[in-house]
Length: 249
Image (cartoon, rainbow, N blue to C red; front, side, top):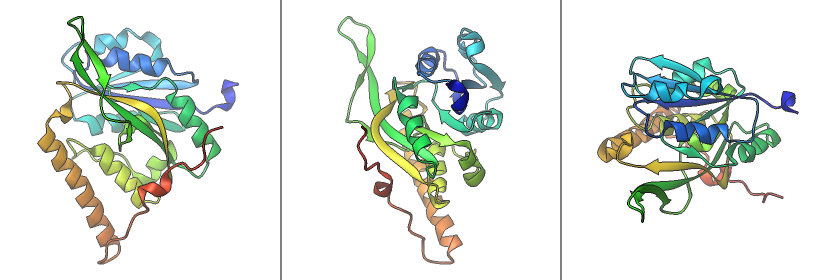
């Protein structure tokens, strides 16, 4: 019965997202799970993002803010979330068909776990045989520090804090590193939970800036761990220690 299932708040930051937003939202709505609230935070879009969101009616909550960047949009969503579990999806990506079913079972069965993280399948936009365009997989599915591949207990945000709004890119990597520093328990499983869509409009197409902020996230982590221990850098638990060991029945 649904009254025994926790409410999940799904936060979708969106900026000039009219091209892909509808498909992203539909991949959330198609999950076989309830109760769920979907919060679209429009970060100052100037295109038809608002109209796309309005097309879903009462199925989503739409909130507009002046353009402040993706971390601020995510933080706005977290502040509005009513659920005990938080999930995210960028406005141009997709969830796999059984993402919530796969991850909520693991979160429920492991009360000590704060974050369940699945694998991400990268797909890229190419020309199809009929002259159109389609997304096709490339590379093997892999674990990525990407919010769209995870579900997170809301209580983890009380411990870790919200996203660093000074990060133009990689605020998710920075947040996951801070979660590790706070000894939040992860569970990493190999099922694909997110389709990460690469196309010309990705903000991460700016590769040099993306790498700059990745390095900054790791440097900040090292600096925090050195400062907290007055010298030597505290070693974090290995990612491999978080991998699921039991096979699903």
